[in-house]
Image (cartoon, rainbow over all chains, first blue to last red; front, side, top):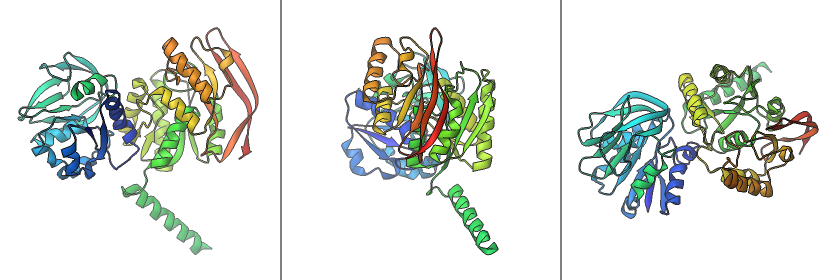
Length: 180
Length: 252
């Protein structure tokens, strides 16, 4: 079972249809079971039961999760694979010591691959929608970058990935590669 | 009398203040509205989760507009009345990129007049539209919602049928569609036909690429329905439009 974490401003929000359900649809098409949980309601048994976790993105103005990072510290001791998308990548970075900086990208953007990885194997044209990026990524390897910021990271010891772009738009394969 | 009005105003001020400042209450959302099935579906989703406070329309004079739906756009005023929401609209020459300035202006107007905190659209897959609207919302400090984003287009058609929309095809702009499609209501049978055409001709079954345009005459959240009294089909070599020349609001 894949645990899909909704980082949006409230449970079952209007944004869920835009940022969470498209990811659930990719997971479903790949033949995997999934459960959706709002980040404020993740229980220990959800983490025990799942095989992998995907943290979804949020609307550009939705940064409420940054004020509730205490609800996401479970990741520190979590040993299963995690994929953080956009806001999810910010969460992954912050949990492991990175810092945010204001860097906005909206729309299609070219990203350059820096290191071969499980998620994709070449440069990509991707859809971006973010107001922050990450710096001080000592605990991570950088896998891809755009002209403006770091786009894909992997934790040096764990199978924890972060991608700044939105794979549900034109790059569904990236999510499928994580699931497989 | 004076005291009563004053008390009402104070209560209204308090409600507005609380709704603008409390995350527990509903967000005030303006919905970009063309009068077609996608914007009506987006409106319904907003009504389910937040507070739809106004409709926003750009009346484009350019029939080839990349951004805006044009057939029967004049009907949005009557649709807004049927729904019971105010309409904020602007006329645009529809010149590429310039029309975005018009869109920004009308959204800014909705923010000023109705205190909207966010904008919702019926965009499904168009990165072109989504990118531009996201940027405008960002510049105006507004939330942007796209409740149909990346949704399967066949599912959209099924949802339109399931929700009980009276959505009529009023424009066809791609082969193999012809004028016989004009005026057809999207019901189960039409939805199935569109699904098959999508598979056979590699077109967007829901018309997201502008292959078809629709006009919604009624939906469960409409307080009145629209009755077409006079319409005329206009055909060119590769397109057709059903122009609604006269329509009236009818009690439900």
